[in-house]
Image (tube, one colour):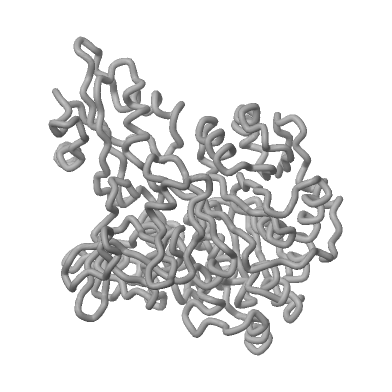
Length: 536
């Protein structure tokens, strides 16, 4: 047995087969739910794994998951891992052009998709010739050759019977790249287990052997319920679910984030650990607790963690007043590094976003890779259990991953300083990446869409602080001479045919001219100042 995620899951199944593993609650008000024990989830994953093998999908080939949250998502991930097929997350907000890019870049051989995405899938398929096997979850969809998921599940054996697996088997997490198009982060499963899943004990001592994980589960009890509320297509939510499985505990899912339904589930299922993405999710929960869901019993809730966006001090304080028993954690990490650390209690507007990092994380000079002196600015880097690189991107891999002192390192895009106690203060992305509600938006991609508008001569895009989303996308636009003045709605409708919804500008500023450097490079500081001033 190795540090392979399927091996580890099966070892847990074997010691707690009858314990509840996964609860799926549909909403709003449908009453639909599914509850699977560890043995039932294991058998369901086996069926999909055998179907994929019988359909000609081979070890090492890639399968995309274009799904909302649901049993089928985690069932398919586990099935892939059992069959040594590489799971690849697909952002369900992508439109045709973005899907074509990802299908091609990831070399997908198979795809599991929700039926409501069928039109987009069908439109992208002709330009994805390697994609040869499709599974459809839900009702009919206009995608020729797609096999209904239920039919696929029924055709596969519930038994295991798989060849030996390895800690070298891959798991790919697609994230945004510097050009705005997604990049596939290639993880060895052993590295992901330790860097992203805490070695089986994110808050304790990692296991020393693969066999030890099941021993810990057998010796412990039940009673912890993990509730990842963001989409599973974001790596953090899927990893949260696997953390729950590694503990032999229960994982709860909703199809989508609806604040009132989330709170009902917290009360009904006695949720102890909930994950979300910053103020964009925490603030609606506060509004619901102060309004229609006032009096909801959240007494079992022990921790609320955020990854991908920070829970601000003000909003956190409001939540603590309503749910005083819950501990709020701002976690810091990335698809390229896993978990790096957690924000200190004194993080905030005055002192900045301060992280107590793990022993494998440093702030380094990006030119020499040497640790920076106290107070100097560098980039966050991590050593040890790090990814192999970016799939199909040799150049970006060379820029991001390096070796030093016999160890492999990843150089993150976050600029930071470090103090005498080793606490890291994160200053922000080195690039101009806009984080809006946990989604990453890159200005260049939005600018290209804006410039395709017939009335736009030039454009820059910047992030503007937003009470709900952390930042919103603002477009600073110079019009063509004699052009009519477009409204924000005009610009949004234009962009909607070219970009996923979260990339659409929420603010439009029309200026006489765009300020650039003499070489023609964008002046993003100026663009942001203009947008912030117009937003006041």
